[in-house]
Image (cartoon, rainbow, N blue to C red; front, side, top):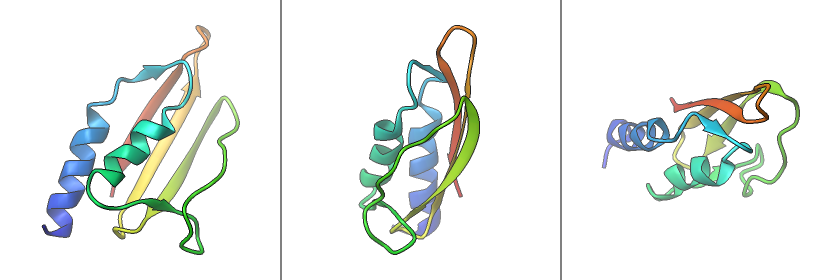
Amino acid sequence: MTKAQTLSKINKALSALDTYYPSIPLDKVFEAVENQGGSVVDEDGSKWSGFLIGDDSHCTFETTLKIFIYLSWYKMGSGNYEIVCYAS
């Protein structure tokens, strides 16, 4: 499979995620990468570990597929998080 095909499949999985969650759904985001044979990693290449903080922020994750995942979130007054996530 080409990188473009893998990227397309990951983006399709990410776009199928609901927009609103009671917490940031990192497991579902990472699963989209894992389903294509990759994993999300830290800068040193080890499996990503960490946590996200703040009511309104964004981050970038590197993958073993040489694809980056971009995630932004906003905690609404209802307590749910609105997320936007895509791969590039």
